[in-house]
Image (cartoon, rainbow, N blue to C red; front, side, top):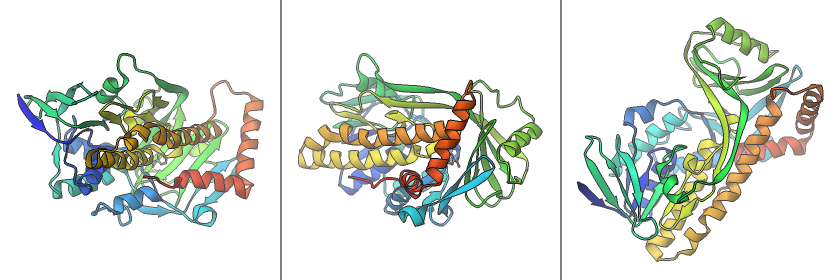
Length: 390
Ligand code: PHB
């Protein structure tokens, strides 16, 4: 058994774990980051792509971020319903923007920067146990060769995603939390085609939601609402294009070969405990949001800024107050993001079984938002991101 010792053992080399290792290093705190996935898998898994301005600024501070060069600044989104488009102009409303920059590209930048800085970063390393989190925590598992390892630390952080191993240890005997499942999913496609629009279109149509997003000048990302049990391979390309075209009336979508398709189920979740003793959760290990609000990675970054500062106070200054306040402070933003994601989802999708009243009420809601400057500003404030705290 190989036994290592570090100050903070970070489980998960996603945006949360990698950013945390950077913030800790800046504060002179050593950490080891482990992830069950290979580097190639992390760098190629397709995730969402909207970064709040605050997230882009945090990534700028790490060095090597291509968010502003390879990514694209978006100064607005369009809400489309009842045959009309309504632009939400972010700079005019809140003097902020967002960046379309796929998460796996941000991860390539983060991994390169952390390795260049000498970070101990271990891929294909599976954590099976999280022990003694009340006092002297340890993680155990199997390394990239399948050999058992143990890492002893002063603190363990779970940035290990929605199926978090660390979450089970933090929850103790019984996992608790707040959970909401939605009666629909998104059918997502990646295709070789030029952009159909210069900004994202969130379209509420009578037969369901669609989102027109982009990836580059030659690759596009689009989604449409579907039943959660849909088999991604059951639809022909012609059927996919027919559904997308019908749901974005007023725009002729540029079609092209579809080279990836997936069905994304919708969930909202907040873990009952974000911290216990010498262990804490960040990012998807702590919460899940439906993708409609584009909050996933941004919320992970916000958690990490709070936790990074709390760990600095704890491990450098011996001050417990930051870590004691972590869960309560993080939860304020988490629940605002939960609300925003739920609200965008419910406002834009057609719920199965909804009737004429529901449909007209939803159009009334969309009009109250888009026809009011206060309404547009409320949406812009949330979409571009509330101020980040440390
Ligand atoms: C995406 O481009 O994948 C994307 C953009 C905005 C969302 C969700 C996904 O709200």
